[in-house]
Image (cartoon, rainbow, N blue to C red; front, side):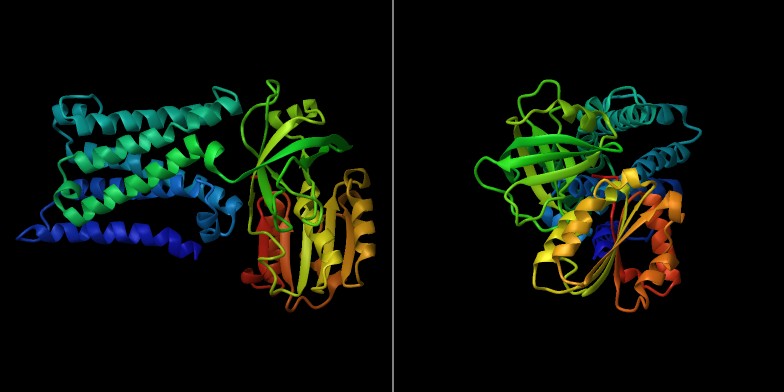
Length: 429
């Protein structure tokens, strides 16, 4: 599904561009550099529209890409490719006009043709935003604000593409497709940047407790003011603390570690950045807006797999806490092996809770505490020694990205197909 969602818009764009050439009576009559400049600009427009759509936090779009964490990682990769294509479009135009100094200069300096001026402005804005990102000229909160300007750059470039003297404007199907991409990307950008905090599904909570567990791990407990949020074990949500000048007003994602059977919400997180450290200043009674839930790394989505291996690295235990509490109490009996890997025993802040929760369930829940200072790196072979035959097991991974990539490689080497290996990119949340 994800590959189809990625390939289809690019395929439509390419086919329509090729068809636009059939309007010439004597076949292909476009210079090679000019052709390359056209197709790269169209691909850039298509990918930028997809980038804005993917980042809109739409539940429908999220499902197409296998979860919001994967959507956002895809968003980052596509944005880099789209930027490279936009730059390539300009370079191919330079090559096409090489030798004509006036024409080359007109590609960088505004003139009397407004579509070209919009394209120049959009490209300069993109370069500025990339420079701000690469060289970190501002705080993360300030970067979030400037990052919203990418939508303006997209609209400028889109209007430039449609308004310029080219086959895009001359060939109606291609023109209509380009307009459709601009509208989709523009609506997604307006929704995410301007409307989301006001129209997205959200719930009113108040802070019940903020506490530090040690090893840089903290918890935020919330209580519903009116309607509680329904969610599946393993999902996450965005929160915004209201009315606190000392805590940034941004929407921040957190994995849910409580169980849906509870009325309150518990978020477990590592104090790794400015925002999470500022949460120490929050006090019981502070109002919080909760947006969500999000995520495809859930018991519900993996219902078909009755034998599962859960591997958590450090704070990657968070979604498994919710899933474990759920599995320990429901009647849908699964065989679950949970491996909780940390450097030291002191970092295993949820060890006691896991033991107690597992003990309340049936004997189908097995728990292994793995300490790297004692046991070395956790490997798929070590897991197999505990579990036995891996046939029919689904493997769920949550932890540092390098750990998840390596564990996936090892399990595949042991014969577990990629279709039965799932992961939550908790570096996003």
